[in-house]
Image (cartoon, rainbow, N blue to C red):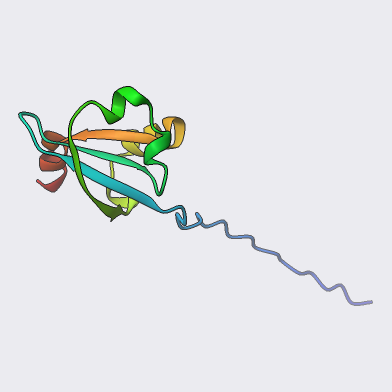
Length: 91
């Protein structure tokens, strides 16, 4: 009698982030970047849209953000990143 033993290995890999995100920048005394779900600018809270004059729009990869910014985007739908955070990330 033969016994055939099969091993099944399951490898779980994180799914790539397929949700598109957009960002827009403010120009003022304290430069900021607002990141949000693509096409959802009008759905952002009114106070956020009035925080600064937001200019331009560009696509964003969330892999380059800090974990707490990614968590804020998943929880609130947007994140505001001050320029000092970008400079610290680049260093």
